[in-house]
Length: 426
Image (cartoon, rainbow, N blue to C red; front, side, top):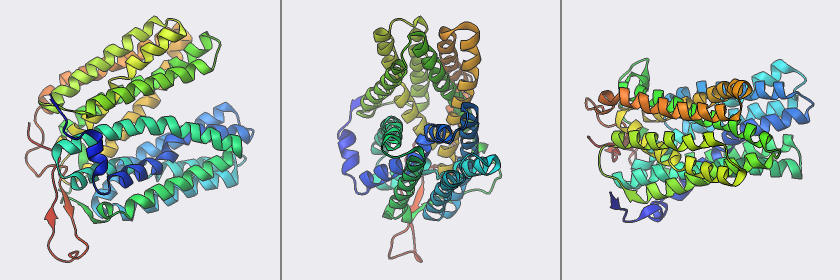
């Protein structure tokens, strides 16, 4: 590996970079905070925890369905035509929930389903924009790492913002404010020049879209288990806090995981890495799985918090490296859809992790919950090892998935120039 010449500062100095990153993070706040916001609102309306969980689950399921579909629409029709209308519809869904309350259950379920289904694929959209904005492969790879670090910040700050709004006003106000901010974030992104002029490369018509890539399918299989590990840690962390009689312990564990991910992502993005990213991803996932093993010791709160920080070290680097692998294996013209599939698969895996870890904790205790996380981490590694031949051959039959077409303001009806491709041959 070699030292990076500019690090993250070089990325943030690029024209439009700060606006795109900030707008995407603000635009994704509704998605990052939906579970806690829905639960708090439902409880304030007098609903049970079961109802709150069911509404949050419907939102999550609808979101998992909508992300790749909207990602495909972005690839076909451009970002502004899809991202902003989707953000508005999603916000209107949450507004309907606030207006209708939880008294009329069919309406409440419909509202959260609409909100989840139309959550705009801003995350995949940003990664599709980086090549054209930054213009260099190494800079794009550092931007992927910065993106992964920024996600950790968002998933830490977002719930804190919701609880602050609830304390100052009400859960209903929190839902409305967060979703209004989401629309403003999406608006900031789609009004930027890179978003307005971005065009996906021409794509081959195929009903499977991005999923016709064997390499992408292999990666999605691995990241289902990474998501499962994260979901199970959430449940096991609650059980650990219960064992120690303090709810605040759970917050410390989650904060430590996030801190570890921030440190790991910062260090990873500050370097240039040689060699094929597929091989590097296997190493990172292996280290991630090993990091979960010490959690099975469930020591006292202070050492357990330190172990949680170690367990989080390789998450952001693994995610950042996965972005590169997606870009190398996505069929031409499907880059936003491919990134959205990664988001969806990770989310479905996390939901499965919470479902599996709950019974494990009830049957065998807290250690079993952390055992699910470790087993899932090694399952992800096994998937990557079993598919190493598939992943070793990025798509070469078409132009790279990261290819974009930048249309200038003065030449929309004339010639176009192909943008930088962030994918290189292994």
